[in-house]
Image 1 (cartoon, rainbow, N blue to C red):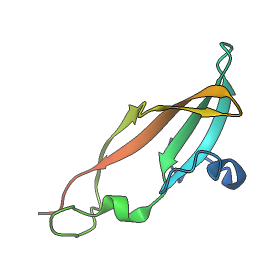
Image 2 (cartoon, helix red, strand yellow):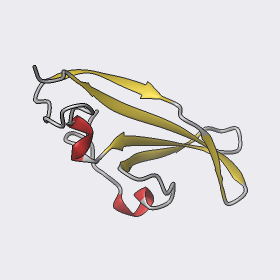
Image 3 (cartoon, helix red, strand yellow):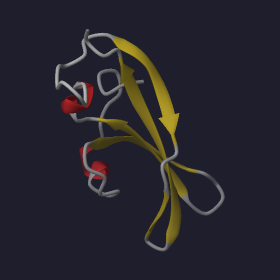
Length: 89
């Protein structure tokens, strides 16, 4: 799953208020709050933080749960699928 093979929900993307990420789906967890699945949508995330050169080779993906939020008085869990890139040499 990446921003290239999963449809981005642009309306839902505005709800979490997280810069540089896009919502791909929302599922009700059955325990009183939804789980929001997001991916990094900012292309600059591929740039090396020290030299700024853009990576062209994907290393792998990691899914993190950065924080719990609330929306409409209900708890919301975030699952963020991040691409890890090989730094250019």
